[in-house]
Image (cartoon, rainbow, N blue to C red; front, top):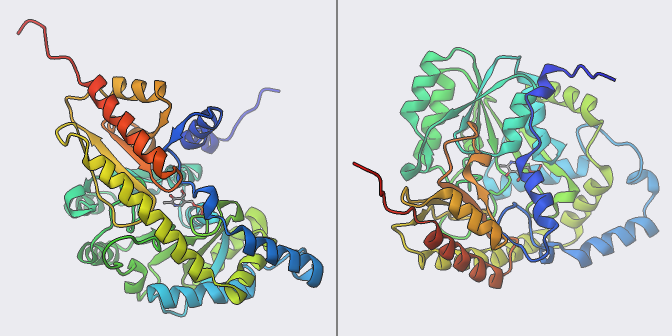
Length: 406
Ligand SMILES: Cc1ncc(COP(=O)(O)O)c(C=O)c1O
């Protein structure tokens, strides 16, 4: 059969993250700083086992094995809304749609709002899943340069694009503990970007899967708290605070947008895995879910501090990094004196996995000197060993002095 694929699928590439993951998982000795995975000990096995046992022995199978509502399990939707109010002061009349991971939130938003050729502005280095969702519907992801010192998109650059590009439909942002950069946009920048979005009448998609994992300082208000007119679609996830396999994410949007999102959800997969929705609601209703998140935060904070301390010991004329205040990642930058190819070759040999900057960028090139480190999955010992090996890779990769004829 000579398949004639639709154009939209030809623009997609296999997720470089997933491809890399397969390779590294096959290698047992690898120290992986690569993926945004929780460690095995983060999974609340005892509670999940107890809830599952109770469901299978005491509950009516109709209540957790039957088809469910596309909007999500009503009790879970209520609990998520209450949690958003309590933890993030997101207090509005908007409804919550339970989705299959926040990956699906972005997919549905693009499906509902973007025609082919529409532009979605993104932070220049960003989550590759979102870039693929944008491309998947024939929309165009356009990178906006970052002002890394300000931990924000460069507002002047953003405004210039908005002035000159009439096709912009949406702004995709990870304002808190950005992936891959680890930056958190300060409040004044959040307000300024919101104002620009209002002025140029575009939507904002606020992607916030890491937002609760704060290790230092005070939380910064979510952009969604500023939204009085349904301009922001807010997405969250339980992947990083419960289990990625639950595939439970959620999105909040104003009524007319929500109606269309639910339609899109129905045709995508009817509803999010109902069994997991019931398990999560049980967890939140009858066990100490917040205690679990607090415990996770402490566990990650220790790893975060360990990695920052280890990085601090590396020579700052060869490697710098952005110090995040929470989340899952630290992004490092090699000095221009470092030969990035030799650096990554050394890490490959030493079986230390990192995510090179190009993979997590809209353009796919030009970020050879940056790489992302995850600190939640490795053990403390692996963090020590892996960062020492990164130091060795720096030594190995120092570009030889120029010996040509001047
Ligand atoms: C910024 C960002 N958004 C969304 C996701 C997807 O999360 P989920 O497992 O909820 O689909 C990730 C996962 O790594 C992410 O980093």
